[in-house]
Image 1 (tube, rainbow, N blue to C red):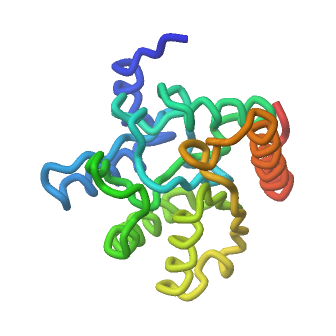
Image 2: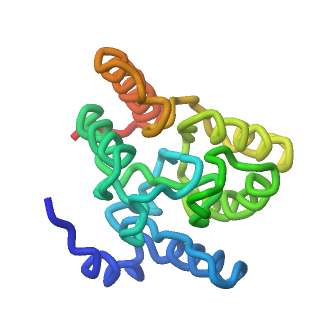
Length: 205
């Protein structure tokens, strides 16, 4: 499937994603010279019930977008999860604990400063997506980031009735296992998304 990224760029100011686009622009302005990939406009900030939280933008985001249509294994796995859980992408939105593109030579784990830098953007992101009822943390770093978020903002997720799910990362070491184990991990991820959908009252496609 060939994606016309220019076509997607033209949709970034549409009402379903405009505020998130603006947030990405503001984050880039705060760190001159930095890149924050835009969120694919297939997602919808009014309909979003589930946040798919990953650690930091991977190489697939060279497209300029955080998208399950990107050319990397995590994106392909997200597509599989949406298909297997029969989840319409407008009900979910991806975000990164550290939303800026990092230098390729940095260790894959986020440092304390990076996690701290990501707190406020995530809070702003949740304010925009005000109907979220679940955050699925992909990978250990995403989980520890959420713990820090709760400490910093005094359990704001729990108080907003948002359930946190811990899942494996969708790429990298987590899936550097046998094929049978990969299938098992994928199935576990699908179950988590299905549970989050059920809590949010999302109908299957």
